[in-house]
Length: 308
Image 1 (cartoon, rainbow, N blue to C red):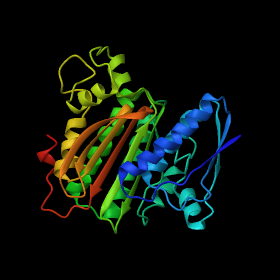
Image 2 (cartoon, rainbow, N blue to C red):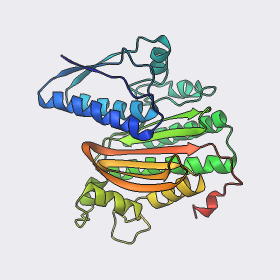
Image 3 (cartoon, helix red, strand yellow):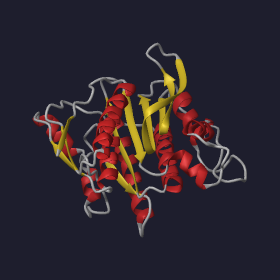
Image 4 (cartoon, rainbow, N blue to C red):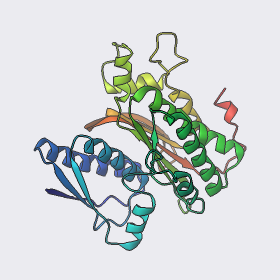
């Protein structure tokens, strides 16, 4: 058995959290290539971990354990950190398929500032009803935790619904994953949604959109509203509306990682809007979407300006 020491960055920069995640999955993949069947992830000296690390690493662990690789976790020595990991249900997540009392467990997060790691079903008998109840329960929690207005609640609900719908309709993943946390002192809500499916590019290729040949092109196509169907651009991915609502309407940050490409748009520390797409050395077999939503302090937010 090989051991990897895991001490996530305590930086609030999204890029730093993801960079460390890249590093860890590269080490794990390297050990798998060496035919290592048992890998210990040692969180013993971990003091804290953000949703942008905990959520995708949970999704990744679930994926590789399906490849007959056993992951052994050593919990944090710090008791507060250990309790947090247990409370958010790292790494298995709150999974309705194995937990008949999941609604009771989810409601216990009402007074907290964060959501558990949520593992929602994408297929199977009863999965649609189960998923809808899970996501509606999540939105009730967020509205209560953040004391959101009806319009802001509608905006965040739209963001979550669009991305989870895309996972269900296009990713071919068995499950999707979601986690969030509100940082009161910093004034923003972080949400992360991921899957380990066929990626945006895989979805386009399955639909015989053969002109789209790279993950970068697939992301840019999704951002342009290009459908996986051949009957116009109004069907398929609802990412353009999601992007506009989040970055223009709510003043947030949007990040999308699929395959070996990452797209990001939002305000930097100087409050200037930046937009870039990067090639990555680390490959993600699926899609990870990140929202950073600042506490809304402006005038009245009108969701109908962005969603018709």
